Length: 348
Image (cartoon, rainbow, N blue to C red; front, side, top):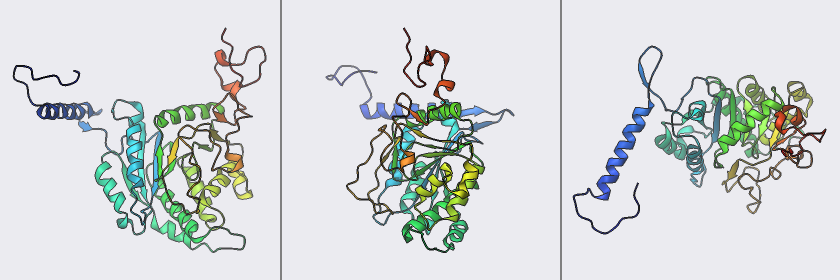
């Protein structure tokens, strides 16, 4: 690779435009060849499309609706995800992470930004539509005294029910990261998620939810039964509270109807926010001047009190609760001489 362009030297050289075209062609051919792998029966197949694995380790699910303003939030969210998602087929995260966009718009064909996203990213992203029948059934839920959700929030919750039903109709994934389409994933956040998942299993093998951002965005749950249980809880209470509050009810077990399912299972909060919010309007009518947490900032704002990362309880950890830290830590990093769990190691 050379430096800047010098003066006109002698000899025959292709123009920079032709050279760039040749390099681009070579790179494209190299990429295609690197993706051609041989299956067990000897047949060639092309890998690296939208669904790289029969059972994804992580399915990133973006719930998307069109905006009357025509805002292209979804395009920005996908661009950020694909920049973070490994481009090399040989990278283990590439083959174990699936990105899915769920079209929650009604009618679905009117979501013009999603149609454009499908044209641009259809090779690496799966696009599905919400299960309209599930959303309609949810909307038949009557409002009762004490319910506080307004009509737009109620509709959003029922759209989420239809979206989760669409995810449940797909082949199962080990974990599902729930996203909204107006959040940008932070740089290297997928590596941070891998680290968090490993640590969560070390602390509690049967954890129920992991929070890495705000609202109904940035929560990891397990696929299958847990995702189905969450869908049922949203469907049962669409008028009562906003969907992110219902989500907390579900994984915290704070209500009688969620206590049994959450019994003996923990939820964890990551110290660092892994998403950046770019949406200008909210169905909850949040103030436009509200503080927007930055990438990797402390998880303390925009959350219910029991979802905030507790720095006092876990001053030297990046997962809360952290009561298992002493048990889960490697021997080299355990506190010596009976020190407090979670205290910094002395390596002298």
